[in-house]
Length: 201
Length: 250
Image: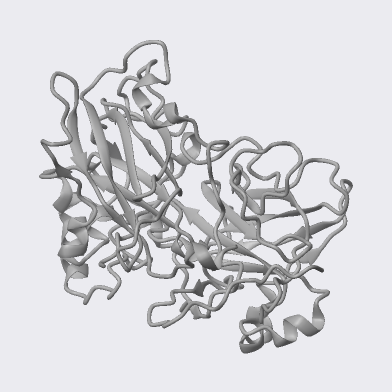
């Protein structure tokens, strides 16, 4: 079937999309929680104050959540999903757990990211990887085909903050240091890869 | 806010739209991100080509939503305050399908829109049109077993924006959708049939394929219209093909 075309999220999504606690993938005080934060910038290097980022990830057990409740925070669950608008300074932040790779995944542990913004007619996909997975990153089907400079745009930078371990992940929409954005369309794929088996850790 | 240059006229933007319409459209119908007539794309569209990559197992799964996330009243935007909002009450309904025509079941739709006067409940909206104390303009719904959704709302008004001199957006409702894979994510806008502003609007015209443009326009449907109460519109939405069947997502 012919798909429905994308249109920009526009500047006025603030009362439509953001949700309370949208950056709380885990509740405050969760052992092992990290802060993932950064700045979204445009082609002139100016902060983008009207972007919306979504993050989706497996947990530390390598499992992607399959229970309903990705939007509403119940104060105890790991939801795997974050939705955070940038603030006036173009900054965003979320609290989450570091993912592990799902069993059988050829990819290194990562968060999937979607970028929406006024002036962006079709969202952009990217990924956040972590620097300490040296071997898995070297074997990752995406990271391994990028040159060093471009690859670096996908790897979060550890930066211990006052609230615990922090990782900086900036998004450059255009220009020098432009973030690697992905075409994940699987048109023509006969079979989607088999999903994760429920294997105990 | 600085305005370094005189904004272009509608005539100039319309000429750019006509030029862009001569470029072969993308096969999938989506707009090119770098689209000159919509001036805000100039610094926000990537210059590097997208890196083609197979989706990861994470990206082949999607967030799951349910009763905890969305209440039934969220789908009726006319009942979010004590009084009735002003304007033309409408019903917007349809189905969410994947590229193979299969229903996208039990997934989240979100909408947001201007009120009947063309004003958003947002600090950044400077349009000198009245806010409606009885209308916020945000709604949510979960599709049923057949991928159906249904919203009750008010027909939004057209409104001016500052892309160029005398720029007006055709009336539209913003839609946000999830599929069964993260790769199927879609944010788009639904328009109303026969709007005289279609030809002048760079955002609508960023979809350069005419058939694809029509897929953004709802159909008036008298069978959806309810007597003595509300006019009905039907709009089906088809997400990108990538999918994981529920059986795969134990």
